[in-house]
Image (cartoon, rainbow, N blue to C red; front, side, top):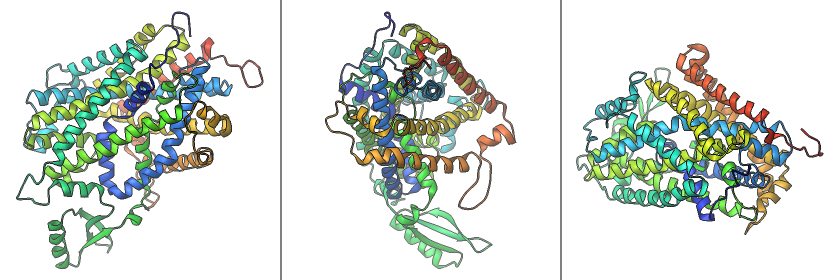
Amino acid sequence: MTASNPKEYWNSRIGIILAVSGSAVGLGNFLRFPGLASKHGGGAFMLAYFVSFLIIGLSICWAEWAMGRAGGQKGYNSSPGILGAITGRKNLKYLGVLGVLVPVMIYMYYVYIEAWCLGYAVNFMAGNLEFQSGEEASAFFGSFVGITENGAAFGFGIRQVGFFLVAVFILNFFLIYRGLSRGIELFCKYAMPALMILALVVLVRVMTLGTPDPGNPDLNVSNGLGYMWNPTKVFVEERTAEGDWQKLKEIVGERSLSAAQEEASASSDLRVREISLPEQLTNFQLWLDAAGQIFFSLSIGFGVIINYASYLKRKDDVVLSGLAATSANEFCEVGLGGLMTVPAAFTFLGIAGATGSTLGLGFNALPMVFSSMPAGQLFGFLFFFLLFLAAVTSSLSMLQPGIAFLEEAMEIDRHRSVTALGIITAIGSGFVVYFSKDLKALDTIDFWVGTFLIFVLATVQIIIFGWVIGINRGLKMANQGALFPVPKIYGFIMKYVTPTFLLTIFALWTTQNVFGYNILTGQQEYSSYWKDLFIEPNGVAWFSVFLIVIVAAFIAILATIAKKFKFQDERGKKS
């Protein structure tokens, strides 16, 4: 740190816990997690999710906390500096570049979605979101975010995203400008409790919906919870011309089941089949989705925790703090998000409305749900405002790693680094928002950075912790000042099991989602992301990848020329 830029610290343990929890709590908790759980069968998904939490989540979380604090004690707060300093190996700072690239690039499109949340909250409060059909909800969403043509998102009326984008961008940088304790920590101390209170209010309303439509008695909250959490799934299957059976529709509720059984008994080409928990666990896509959700759930592999932990003091307890932060996040995800969104959508819209993508569930289905329920205008506002608060706490965490890196690499104070990062992210966000047609820029960057590079960074971090630093030294770093140490079994898990699990999941995911090869069926269909680059080149997709490469190169060049990143290796030689 320079004399004009003294070392920052968190003011309290609860402050860092709420800040780290805030970085993880976001749209993934209230939309992505419930959607995946209902898709795969709650019981099966939760088992895979819990295994992934123990093997991937806690391991990488504790590793990031330990490495971050150790790097902070050596005077570094950015991922390139931390990895270089604690290992004494110059080249590892280039792997640390990912810890800056990932959060900065994600911020460029996440702030756009953050503006959607605020815009929907304001429009609910203004009474503009009373939809009678899915077509109306989709039309409003398309118009609001500018999905029909490039440049359409720059409108500044209340029914357009432009004004809200400017507002949230200014809010984020105002808070980050105030610093670690007076900005991020102070905001999270108020925002996180407020978020949980709002979520509880909406949850109570959802749990008391009963059966809104007496004409469809199977559409009720109880069946909505059953649809999401039952360990078994029941489907009507249809015989194909080749004699194979394929899923036709899912069945939920006793009346629907009885009707389906009667229909199947009258036709030899239909059958009702129950898919058990063990059978569901043989679906490797379930494991891919569960492992992927862990990254979003705990904010691991984002470059955020390692940065936040670098501002801890030497004797601060990283083991307990890490466990507390993950517990708070799991409460929001499983206890609130898992009981709120999908059951509400099912109760009013049935299975068709409760399934779909994260954005489809959040910005198409749920506005229709709130339009249909008593006092829906109020509860719609509360729901989207809590999403907005969650998005702000997450977006702040995405900015801090970039701030820390610019401070160290350019040897400037916080205020100048905030200005520099503001210019960089404004250009990047402007690119994403301008190319709003079909959300192509957002979707491309989200795939290659928000999914692909997160896997890479998480794998890099756990391998460095277990193999480069060494598991014994790594655990000693983690246990310093701990009320209780990391369980001994985690020494074996973090060194062998977690890297193997991650590499296996990553290989399967890349094979299926990048190269389009389905291991189970042997069929190959290139993913849209691969097609956009190499099969049917899409200009926006190429420009999006080019933007990622340019930002990565900029960070790597700064890491190369920065005086602060000239490390002393383990043998005492300059490297």
